[in-house]
Image (cartoon, rainbow, N blue to C red; front, top):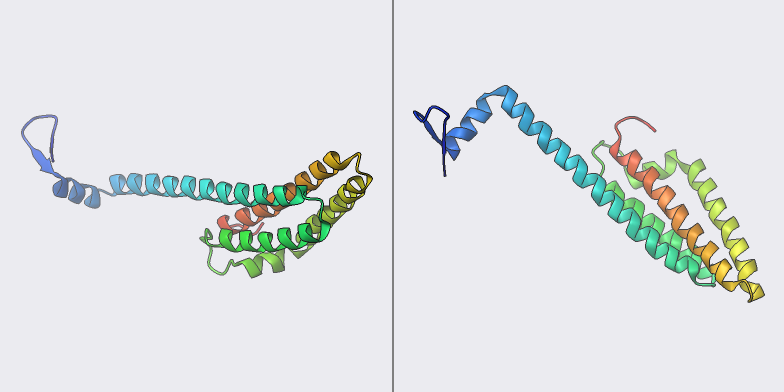
Length: 163
């Protein structure tokens, strides 16, 4: 591949062009800026896909009218999701365990809200008539709570500021 200059006097091969970029600070910074922006976009997209996948699975589990299965399965899936999101961390020392230590109050509050929604959905499930409503509440509660924790974890792992 040959790149021709505007004046048709000089031609540059790919190696020469890479050398020019490497020695020219402005071009190097522009190239790095574009690479960082592409990486940030990829990381955000990957985080969104991970959170959506786990939230969807937990919603499906939450729709099943078996309260014991619901809590155990969503808790385990939540732990797996936070560990996977920890891989996206660019800040040294931020792990799944440090996330749980720092955000234990929020973690507990979201889990409490999840249990309250589970109790409501179980009551509606037991009536039989309101089973679809109970299943919908269970699904929304499970998926929503997992998504809240997932996005909080994503922000923790990808932001340099302490959130």
